[in-house]
Image (cartoon, rainbow over all chains, first blue to last red; front, side):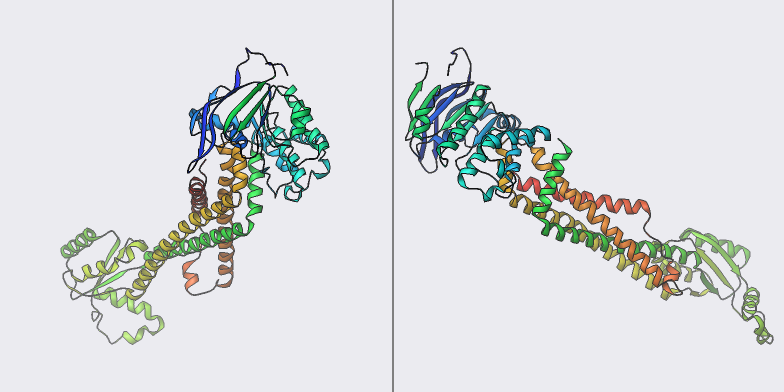
Length: 233
Length: 294
């Protein structure tokens, strides 16, 4: 995908460190910049720090040291109201899904649209489209707790994508999926990316890395950013 | 914030914690019923006291008939002690005539008596409400110190018993008021906290997807408000049913006839409802502040 060098960064890390108590270093001096509309692969083995990096972007975690800038806002100086608005613009698909097991698939996917007061008709149409795309239509009214892990993963991705977020973060989005369903998920990401969303996919799925191209591939090893491949370069 | 979104969330909350919601509703209803019941008794006793007070007179028996000048002095002394509706001086002859009238067809038994054998007396009609009935003893003691006073007579036993009973009801009213405050705030507060705990994962997700404070807090606030509205409404409705039952079953001679039961006036009913709703909402706010650190 082409990137324009003049385009401002939508996400910027400057010498970011994250240390979990007592002294577990998750990220060390990580610096990178992502432009709006880019699709990024974040690679590295399990425990390398990929999930921590995504959690720092959506302010679920806070850096021990360094600066994180998202959509022109430095996260450490952001007000609660600004944080709330920022989070509405970030779709996050968690590795552990974070679906509410007592709610149906429909109710889970509707949540981000409900908190932004999207009209019911729009919510219904969007959910139907996403369920159809991700092959989950027959699970619409099933409680999330009753789904298989693969179905839960797709439902979590649908929730993350529901609100057409300008930034979408996906943590191991194909980890529980077969090849066919993984392709459906990548199709969804591609659609969002073409519509202007910035997509960051944390993955170590070799098929994804082989079959799909990204503007940048960031590789993390033991908390350090060791490779920053840019497509332009 | 959209009302429909708040309502959907509130219904979801109520469904998830319906057991504790019903317990809280029952407690609030019972507290409002207990408080308003004793308030109703207090109010009716007060009315009865006023009615009783209207009929109360103190009789001061004198050893001799006071002169006109002495009567004026006594009037002035009595009025300086307390508010008095009427003071009537009766001579021995007046007392004799009154007794004759009271005896009716048997009046001839007095034929051989001296028309001045009865002592002269003063009828004092004090202005008072139930709150001052307890002070009637002081008034009687004062009247006993008037020049020439031999004895002061009034319905001392009744007045004292009514006074003590009113004091007791007032005490119970304060206690039940305290009970209402405690149950409304603490029970509602605990129920909301339970809701927050049971929905913690959902609230956490909401926070992560950018739900505003009002979006998360408004349904919990509405929950407390609903507890107040339903609890106090049911409490007052139960009181009304109880009142009708009492009127129906005790509508005869005796104490209830004397009390002439009346229900709480609309303004007072409104005040009890408003205060209960306010207390429940306060309990809800306290709980939200404690449980939700957003």
